Length: 319
Image (cartoon, rainbow, N blue to C red; front, side, top):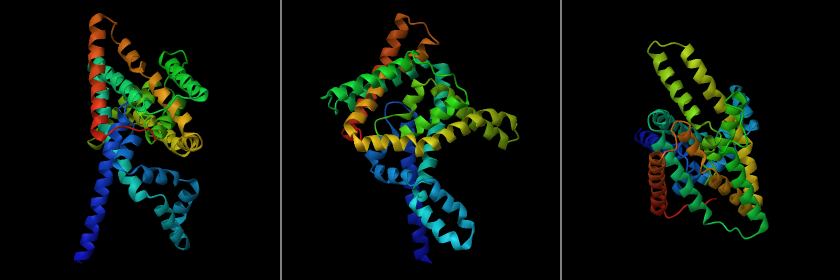
C-alpha cells in the first residue's frame, strides 16, 4: 500500500514538473522575442517535445478512437504511449494557463498603455534578432538571398504593403496554424508572427473575453456571450492543430535538409518584424517627440531584458 502511494506521488511530481515547463513555455510563446521552442531547449525537453508532436498522426488518433472495442485496446494503449500524451497534456495545460493569463494583461495594456507595451515588444524583437543573428553565417549568395527575402517579406507585411484580408475565419485559422507551428521552433516567436499579421491584440482580447464569458456562464451568465469569442478561439485551435501536423513538419524538414539557409530565413523574418509593433502605437497616438522618446525608452528596456535573459542562460542558439 505504501509503495502504491509513493508511486502515485512520483507520477504527480512528474505531472507538476511538466505543467511547470508548460507555464514557462506558454509565457515565452505569448510574448514576442523569445520562443517557446527556445525555452524547451533551455529546460532540456525539446527533443521529447518534437518526438511527441511528430507522433501526433491520424493513424494513431484513429487507433485510440477504436479502443472502445476490447480486442483493439492493446493497440489503443500503445498509440497513447507513442503520442506521449502523459507529457503533452500537462504541458499543453501549462501553456494554455500562461497564455490565458498574459492575454488578460495584453488586452488591458493595449487599451491603457500601448506605448509601453508595444515599445517593450519592439525592443524584445530587435534584441532577439541580434542574439540569434550573430550566431549565423551570411557567407554565401544563397544565404544572403534568403536573408533579403525574409527581411523584405516581413517588412512588407509590417508596412501593410502586402495586405492581409482583415480578421475573418480564414485568417484566424491561418494565423493559428502559423503561430502554433512557430511556437515549437526555437528562435521563432508565434506571438511575433501574430503581431506581424495584425492579429495579436485581437486574438488576445477574444481569448480574454471567452474566459470571462465562461466564468460568467458558471455563475448564471448568458450562453450567447460565449459564442462569439468562443468561435474565434475554436477557429484558432483548429488552425493550430493543422499547423502542428503540416507547417511545423515542413519547417523541420527544411531544417534537416539545409539548416543554415532555413535559419537565416527565419531569423531574417524576425529582423524584418521589428517595426511591426510600432504600427499599433501609430494607430492610437501621433508620432510626437514625446511619443518617440517614450517608445524608445520602453524599447531599450525590452532589449535590456532580453539581453539579460540571454546572459543568464548562457546564450540563445537557434536550432
